[in-house]
Amino acid sequence: MLAVGLWGLDRDGMWRDEAVSFQVGRRTVPQIWLLLHDVDAVHGLYYLLMHAVLAVHPGEVVLRLPSVCAAAVTAGLVAALGTRLARPRVGLWAGLLYAGAPMAGHYAQEGRSYALVAAGATGATLLFVRAVQGGTRRDWWAYGAVLGLTCWLHEFAVLLLCAHAGSLALARAERVRVWRGWGCAAGGVVVSLLPMVFVSRGQAAQVAWLRRPTADTAEGLLRGFLGPAGGVYEVCLGLALVGLVGLARRGEVTLAGVALPLTVVPPAVLMLVSQVSPLYVDRYVLYALSGAPLVVAAGAERVAGVVGRLRLGGRRAPTAPKGHPQLHLLPQPPLVTLTGVLAIVLGFLHQLPLLRADRDPGTRADDLGAVSRVVGRELAGGDAVVFLPDDVRNVALAYPRAFRGVRDVALAAGPAESGTLYGREAGPREVRRRLGRLDRVWVVADQDLLAGHWIPRSPVERAKLAVLNRDFTGQEPILRDRTAVRLYVRNPLPVDSPSIHPLPIHPPPVDPPPIHPLPAGPLPAGPLPAGPLPAGPLASGSLSAGSLSAGPLASGALASGSLSAGSLASGALASGPLSAGPLAAGSLASGLLPGRATLASA
Image (cartoon, rainbow, N blue to C red):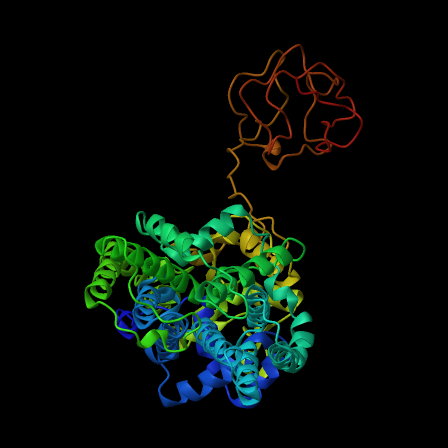
């Protein structure tokens, strides 16, 4: 298990939950304590442990090392259970099966508490078997202490009490000492866990994203326990069914009687509760995986016994008397043991592609390391950045070097000082004001949110999204899994925007066409000749009283003629024919000549 866990441990990328472990573990103890009042109380003990571990060296490999070690310990404890309840080769087979399980290998390389919970639960089960088989009061107290500590690593480990109660029921234990010892230990565990239960109930919003498990969920968990690869799953399932023979034995715990409840009861209880209030995720019951290899190994042992009897011509091999405490010390044919080991190795090689693929960061929910590399390449010091929603800020907290010198637009208080996972942001009005001063801003966001597949509930998130969609234009995004890094540039404002006051635009001046005055003396009778008027009194655009001497105009009329293709001083006389009208007062209309006579434009 240790070799499998160390293989490809440095994936060069953390996913979101690991990043939380990393950034919280690097806070001070008072800051971690402040955080637990708001979120993640169920992981408080683990965060304190990681604080001590990361103080040695803050890095991704060191973050995952406790999980690797815990998985190796779990494999050893599974082997110890098989040895105690059956014989050494059963323990050997069960331990190897656990070490080669892809699900165990997956969580062995994850910087979260689940591998440690599995180790604690398997250790508590071994102490439970020891206490039932004739242990003292000290054994029961040790059992309660280990299980209580495990529950403080994750509170759902308390479901292990239901599994152990089921084992006692299958064993039909009638001794009052056994039930009393178990009841006292179980009561101590429950009482010690009450403070966490009280606090975590107020933090239930953290798991609001969970959905009710279905039959497909149960089938997926069973495949994860027995082996997801085709062929391996069917063989292990068949051996497990064979291993359930002799499940119950009066007054004695059996291998199947311990392993089956351990495998089935915690997931089943959590799935049933989740039909009312969804709480189920497979990693919450990872510790139940310890029972599956034991049942499979028990089935393999029965098959080996049948084959051995056939080889002996139907004669039963010598065995110890019923209830013999030293059954595991009886001689065992090495060929049978080696055959079982070879079969397990072949199954491991068959599932090796799954284990190799699991070392790729892309198999996790997201890869924040890849996002940080994009940010380090695209953003420069002084650039503004917005995280949408705020939990995407996790990448900056886990990889601060990529964001060095970058301005976080919406942040009001950092995570450590505010006692939150991702920091406290300013209100919607302040966020709009800050974005209003920017011409360009980088956005690190959930791609589904940018695509409009879901709408955030937070007013701050809605304000950020509204301003970006209304006032900015997004450039081509750079995608890494479900996270997008995208530059937004402010839209040019329209000319009629109230924030812009354009200067009035005047057309360039146009010089008027030249106007020539009329010749002195009376105008000749008849129509005026075509063309411009000669220079004279009309050049100024007006005819003063008395300007025209006696003649045809003196009588008050232009005789049935017209002024063609000519003009009088900026349109004083419109082009076109002049209708007959009195000019007796000696004036032209439109204010050019005093009096009431009019010169109508045709």
